[in-house]
Amino acid sequence: MNLAITSIETYADNPWDDIHRPQKLGVALDTGSSDLWVSFKTAGMETTLSYLAGEVIGQIATDTVTMGGFSINHQTFLVADEVSQDSVDDQISGIMGLAFGEIADTSGMPFWQALASGGRLAAPEMGFWLTRFIGDPQATDNEPGGVFTLGGTDSSLYQGDIDFVDIPTPPGSSNTLWQLRMTSVTVQGKPVPITSGQSALSDIDTGAASIGGPTEDVRTIWNAVPGSQQVPGSPELWAFPCTTNISVSLSFGGKLWPINPVDMNLGRLSDSSPLCLGAIFDLTMKAGTFDEPEEEGWVIGGTFLKNVYSVFRMSPPSIGF
Image (cartoon, rainbow, N blue to C red; front, side, top):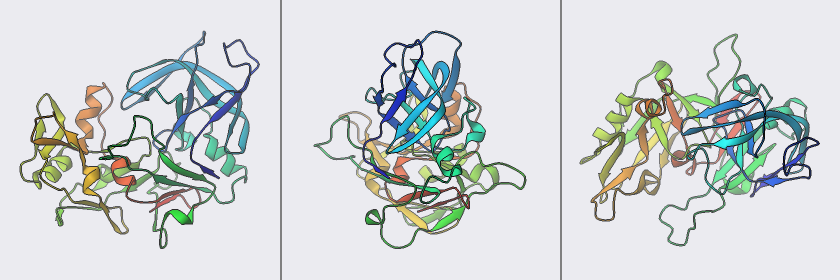
């Protein structure tokens, strides 16, 4: 089912204000988390969901959730009454986590997984095509994010075959996140060395805007760009001369996928600055600023995903571009 605009309807017979009738709520679709939450004012026992850029606090509830013609009658989700400023923007009422239920803090099975496990999807997969508005002078603060296809793919949005790579799940373990192992990186057309092992594990995350990685690997990438430097006061961020077009390509065991230089440039540090903010940041250092445990690997967000059509497949567990 193609969803240009995502909405959720909640049907409740409970004491919460304004939820006695169906509500349509815009949510961010996030393959980097597993919980569903929506924002309402409530009272009672509280649960906290933490993200790299903030947290939400509220009560766990069970209700009917409908999206794009699909419904789950007893979907567990969080009714959030406290939302930190950086969790979502003002146009979004919540987040629908699309990772696996193993890591859901609400202990609820994610919406997509409940549908797939119940055999209600034409195919056990999800497809994403993300829009690009960087450098578009006509873009507003609230633009369509792209097209989400639940239960298949939209062949009108890509050419050729999808190149699937299996998720590296250890024997006897359950899938938790949509992850691949980064195998190679090129900068300005030349390969750069990156750390292998656990540090190469990469969350393919539609809820992330840019790309974050381990300290040494991020430093190596930016050292391959002449004139780049850490941003004063924010050492997890890097900047580079605005006159430079940065060419970065990533591989996860399959093809080498190039990133459009437009996506690598997040804009000038200030109106008069000759330096522009780069779209690859130090994830290890960033996590520390939110008092979160150090991150070992990578988070691969919109900076990369705008350049591919991405498919998340349940069986066999794999990701394709």
